Structure formats: C-alpha cells, structure tokens
Length: 457
Figure 1 (cartoon, rainbow, N blue to C red):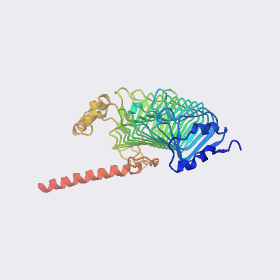
Figure 2 (tube, rainbow, N blue to C red):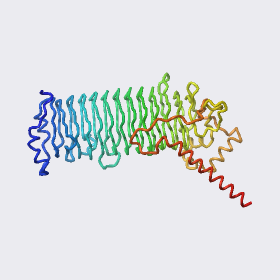
Figure 3 (cartoon, rainbow, N blue to C red):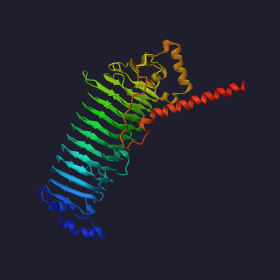
Figure 4 (cartoon, rainbow, N blue to C red):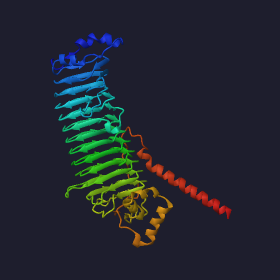
C-alpha cells in the first residue's frame, strides 16, 4: 500500500482555493513532494505550482493535464536525481535561460527508468534533459522553446549517456536540436521534429532504431555521426533547407539500414561523409523516395561501399552530386539484378521485365561542372546548361566519366510506403502524379504552339 498510496493531504486542502480562481501565489509543490512517501503517487488538482522542484526518491506526479508547474523564469521545472520517477500530465513552463546551467523543463541525472509523458513544455530552454539515466522514457510530450536566437536556445530533447531510452510520439518544435549522444540501444519512434537547427542529432550512439519520425523545416533534418548499426526506416524528411540543408547527413556511420524513407524538398536529400568508415562494412539504402531536392544524394569523392536498390529518384535538380569533384567509384547501384528508378532514364524495356535493357548512366557534363563550381547551379535547367550537355553528347571527348552506372534501372516507379502522419509537404503518393501532370501540361502547350505556328504559314 505504501508504494501505491495517493498523496492528497495539502492538495485537497487547496482544491476549493485553486478551482475558485482565488489562488494568488503558486502552490508549494516541493513541500508536497517532500511529504510524500517513497514510491507513492502525488495527484495534483488544477492550479499553478512553483517549479524548481527536486525529486530525490521514487515518486509519481500526475497533473491530470490541468496542473501547471511554473519555474518563474529561473532554474528548472524539475530536477530528478533518483530512479523510478514518473511525471505525467503536466504543463511545465518558464524555466531560466542559462545555457551554462542547462536550465530545463525536466532535468534528470542518474535517474534510471525516468518517465516523462503526456506533458506540455512552454517557454523552456531545454525541454527534457536525461543524463546517465538508462531506460528513460520520453513519450507523447509537446515541447516548445524560448523565443531566442536559434543558437541561444536549448535542445528540445537531450539524451546523454542514457542507453536504452525510448523517445516516442513527441512533438518538438522550435528548439535548437534534439540530441542523442553516447547512448546505445535507443528507440526513436513516431516523433515530429520541426523548425530547429538539427531536427535529430546522433553521435556515438550504436544499435539505435529510428522509425516513423517527421523531420521537417529544420536547417538539417537529421545528422547521424560516429555510430554503428543504425536502422533508419519509415521517416519523412522534408523542407530542410538551411545553409547546409541536409535532409539526412551521415558521417562515419557503419552498418546503416536506410529503408522506406521519403527525402522530399531538401537542399540535399542525403549527404555522405566517410560513411561507412570501416572497410568491411556496407550501408544499405532500399526503397526510399528521393524527390524534389536540389541535390538528391551528395557524396564526398572517396565515399564507397553504399548499396542502393529499389529507390526512386524523382525531379531532383541534380540526382547525384560529388562534392569538390574528384574520383568517385566504389558504390553499388543495383543489388541482385534490381537497380533504382530514375525519372531521367532514357532507355527502354523491350522484354517487359521492368528492368531497363541498357544501363542508366549519370554522365551529364553540366552536373560535373556544378560539383566543381557550385555557383553554376544557378544556371541549371537553362538553355545554356542544356547546350553544354548537348555538346558533350556530340563530342564524346567532352563527356565525363559517369558518376553513376545503374546496370538494372527500374522502368516503373516502385511502390513507396505512406509517409508518417504529421508531415505537411506534398504527399508522397501524389508526387508521381504531380510530375506526370506537369509533363502533360508542357506537352499540351508545345502541341498547341506548333498548331498555331502551322496555321500561320
């Protein structure tokens, strides 16, 4: 009974005061926490409670969705220093703004099995900060940020040396980053990270599963660094267009499985920097949609051992780029006789098996010029750019070595998995239809123009 006792005491004594609107000062939540037996449940009535609460014993605080914890513009909402603490159904607001002190709505240290769920964070520097708190659960929270310059904001979620954590179903908007560092075996599922610097930033965190998230409208959608055996599946990465503008960046990542994701409308869909780093490892990219990006895939020239199969490359201004030029070989563009769908493939499928009868080769001269002189991207798709490519086809000595040779290109668009709920960019299932509609409209305009010209003769 001691572990399941409901602490009401002073809370019930304040019920009529809080509900009558006569409350003039925040309720002393620290006093209620100090009075509660270890392992008990503190159920709060509606009202405003003073923040900067320290919890140093197993405890559950349940706000029922109507209790507000206000830090008064200084310090933290909660500081948790014990295992088995749960915070549920609270609005936590108005922390301090000290990056040195890492003021947070919830700051956990050595708080194993800490649970923060169904809470709303308003005007907080950091949202939830879990340090050395294995098996923490951060679930179904709505996390905002302070109205500061982006570099002065804290992280919506920061997980530090906290292996086995579960970050599930959260909405994180406007913070600096959401950081998962030095933490293995993470589950990051069904979250939405928007309007930040790095929507999701992994470093030195191995064996993680990152699924069904939306990374949208950030400077960088997600950056995975110095990590092994990551599963990145079913995510939507769109509209990330800051100075780097990577939908997904990968630096020294080994053993990644990137499958069934949608990279739509970013400056660069996926950026590869020394990934994989180990010579006996291959990263696998399967059944992803890479569409409407300025550059679909961008590689450093010495990146090798990435295998691509069943992906769809649609309406990217440049399908594949190589940063700074240089020799680019050693990646795999078809696996077991199945390549990728390229919307600019000019080949044919005479035997009807769905595989192009000639390889897809990305060898346009202007794309190579953009790689070495990025400022020339301004003139892409202009008559001048098309003239350069035409000259390279007429004079083979000008034609560059192909950046990509897909020996088994897919003629038809592969089936793309539905995007996760919450993404606001063009629906993936309609991308092909939009492309075809635009092409049909262009063809109709050309035909109409020709008929009118013919009538004038």
